[in-house]
Amino acid sequence: ASSRCGEDSHGKLYKNDTETQLYSLKMYSIIHIFYSSYHLWKYTIYDEDEVLLALAEQLGNFTMLVGGPEYVHCLLPPLESLATVEETVVRDKAVESLRKISQEHSPVDLEVHFEPLVKRLASGDWFTSRTSACGLFSVCYPRVSSTVKAEIRQHFRTLCSDDTPMVRRAAASKLGEFAKVLEPEYVKSDIISLFTALASDEQDSVRLLAVEACVSIATLLPQEDLETLVMPTLRQAAEDKSWRVRYMVADKFSELQKAVGSEITKNDLVPAFQNLLKDCEAEVRAAAANKVKEFCENLPEDNREQIIMTHILPCVKELVSDTNQHVKSALASVIMGLSTILGKDNTIEHLLPLFLAQLKDECPEVRLNIISNLDCVNEVIGIRQLSQSLLPAIVELAEDAKWRVRLAIIEYMPLLAGQLGVEFFDEKLNTLCMAWLIDHVYAIREAATCNLMKLVEKFGAEWAQNTIVPKVLGMANDPNYLHRMTTLFCINALSEACGQEITTKQMLPVVLKMSNDQVANVRFNVAKSLQKIGPVLDSKYVSQPECILDNKVKTFVNNALCLICSLALQS
Image (cartoon, rainbow, N blue to C red; front, side, top):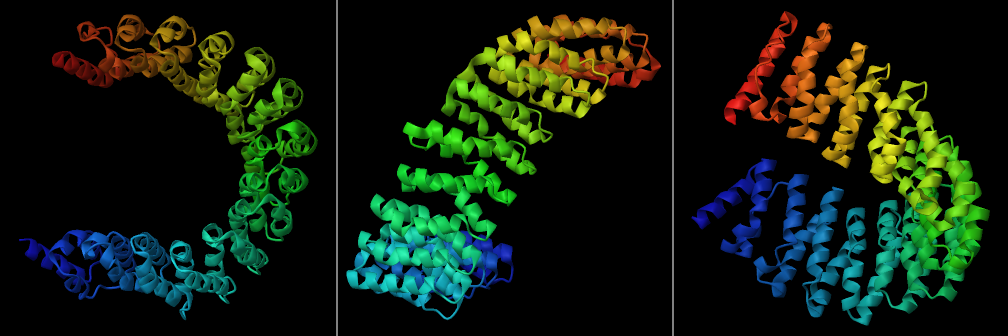
């Protein structure tokens, strides 16, 4: 049976059907138990990229199926072939599998079988093979002889100056990884010169990858060598004519800062960071703004505050009113964290005005990022100071003449309530939330109803029973029928969160009473509410409310009563 299964799967491999071939490749590991290596490889497999990708992945798991590490070199020929194909994802997967099985070669087999494969790829005629070779140097270098190591270093040098930009990109992307496995003397003699050359490449896609490698290289060198060997190139990259290179510097700034140490940070990185925060490209400013908190945290403690107040904060103040919303949003996501670094006095004097400005920003994401991080400021200046500074601005926005502004604040309220706590919420914000329920704009009333539901989920049914439910039910007697309708909408939203007891004993009587309302639309929504809260009600309280007889609502009533009665019968 196993034999028939295997032959059937091999037959499927031969079919010109990608999906069938993929399935068969997944079964390779099982099939191979019953078939010899020769039988496994003798079939032709069509070169669909998806099939080749699956094959490249499966081969990395074949060591035990070819007889163990002693025979793992048998897997090299097909993987070498896959590492040269045109499709990038197939090559990358083949390289990944080669890296994996390289660890299963003995030192002798590594030199006899694996290292020659790397050389062939590195000297191949097509750029595809040379790009694949770049990912293999670091995995074999530590376990080969000194002579072979010298050859590997030479091959890597050659690829770093390859005529094809794609190859130089691949080499630059692996420069830091390769540097980590080299002996210290070769990091200085070989890697630094390659790093300098790649960082000056005519292609910005190569230069930006050299910046990424700079982090690894800097960690490998003693502090006294960084200034002469790394910093000139890094300064050049921070002022590169291509915004993509400057973006990479900004994106890796915190890692670079840790790698070069405090002295170089003070002398070189602080001015560079200022320039990035003022960059002419919004993408660069946004990347730098996103690193403000982390950069400030990593500054030396002895003069951290002085550096921030003198050099960083003026740039931050400019970014608060930046013309690009992505820059402002990136800054808003981290700026609150500066309060823990600068302390209470500086936060109140210098940061609170910036928080207030961002809280009133027209971009919703900026406002959300500020509100999302209020707890950072609360820890530093305390709830009283916070209530005297930021909360008035929040209340002002909540009562703004533009309904879309009010809507935005409503959406943030559950998040804000969770950060400030139930006591503070009841004291400062509860009244505001109830006022939204009678807003003249329907979208606000609807959002306010959803807001109450989220608050009940956050603070619990007991809180709702004591704080929210009485006020909501009291609106059932409001002379404005729209407000009475809102009562029903709130009951619909809150019933499940409040639970069976509150819904049955407090909400249901109000709903039934409203069935006598003079406005037909209210009576119609009573029927809707009965259908909505029916699943929550205690079954012994379920009865047919004969008071609802309006022809306009009969259909909905019937649906509601059918649902309620079916629930009663089930229980």
